[in-house]
Image (cartoon, rainbow over all chains, first blue to last red):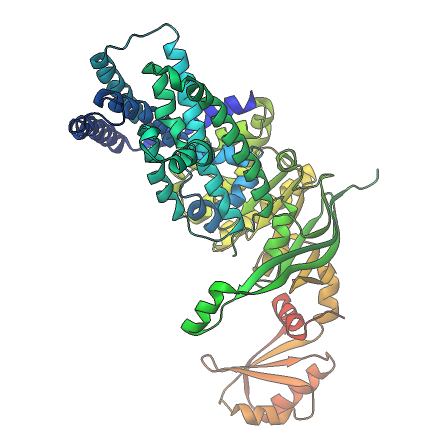
Length: 261
Length: 337
């Protein structure tokens, strides 16, 4: 209850900050929309050259990519913790976080909201409709609800993995060069996992479960019944990974050394 | 009524694991595999307690362990060992409930949102600390008036001067009217007028709400103006804990004499005058001021007599030894007693 109201309070704060720079805001929205449009065309052109890939048609692959963009956009809007080490640990801003009566991870999520990333979801949904129509997919009454469930699950998978990576900063002074690499690995989840060998598939399912942000949940909407089990595992994996990451975070906070003055 | 202790600390210790790097490329390679770890105690088994309503100055040189102690008292760092009880709670274990009862101002760090008006930050913090409208209005109207920040409230923080920002920071730390206030270098870099205003304000809230204040600062005049008690830290140990006055009585004996002469003599010649007496001479070459530190008050008139006999004096001053010098003396000696 308190956390819900805090979410909206911080959201309002974020909006106020944004509105301070009016010109900046318009330019940014315009460039975001433009880059999403370019993205959309780019994806269609790139995938225009692929044909069948291990039993997946071109439009199916485009559909998976479209789906992937949605949870990824949600993740990017709310989990801006890729620079956690530099911004909070090295600069000592984490001290301030710890003197406020809200869970520290929640505060950081709230402080770093970037709603403009949600534009990516618009592109994603547009791509899904485009390829869905080409594939002649039918919409069921429950599809939007399942979609929402899978999107949240996928965003939690991403969130969980990146929170765990951020936790490394509590134990080691290591630079966070591992983060960009992880963004790369995350991209593999948007291709059908059966094109990879078994080991990679295992990693993408159970260790760094990025397949749950792309191919597994998307397969449900493509009517691939053999994947249904994995599709509905998406929210479970999301909750499990995110819970583990919070647990790790809480342990890490006890190890926080503070920035030297 | 029995006085309650706001802070109780027993054998508090915080160790950091550090490593020293070896020199050269070869050393760097060796560091890659085996590092020279060493455990450094930043705070070394200290004990003290602070009563509700006390204003305590916490002083020490850089790296003496001041910040580390404050961070343990505010729940930011977990102690390595020892018992710590602040406002009846263990700061780190019950962090979220605990921080509701303290206010914190870190001089070099901002609590406020940089890009938006000050009052928007206040509004959000009011929600964060779950302060009711009635409490907020009653308490904050007074704070805003005393700190004279009414005209700043609709300005974004980035457009404020340091002094203006600091006053807003202080107000922000008091939104939930905490019974205990931690101030880490609150007057660093501020001009004298702002300093005076902040001191006045702290005194006032201390009297009005019986707020306990723990203050670290490099500026001893803050401490002289506010605190009856000081805790002095050196290399993680408490080397003095007691009244500022008795520290002065014990160490502040003696005077400083300053002379200016019509014709400037050599420093050697002046030093020769008091040969055999515990008098220490210094010369400020720019202004040609000769100063003599005299530990024994009885030697003051004898020194004056000898100097006056030998040279024509243009100006002379007798100063008390300042707190700053007392503390410098203590650190040079390494202990009180």
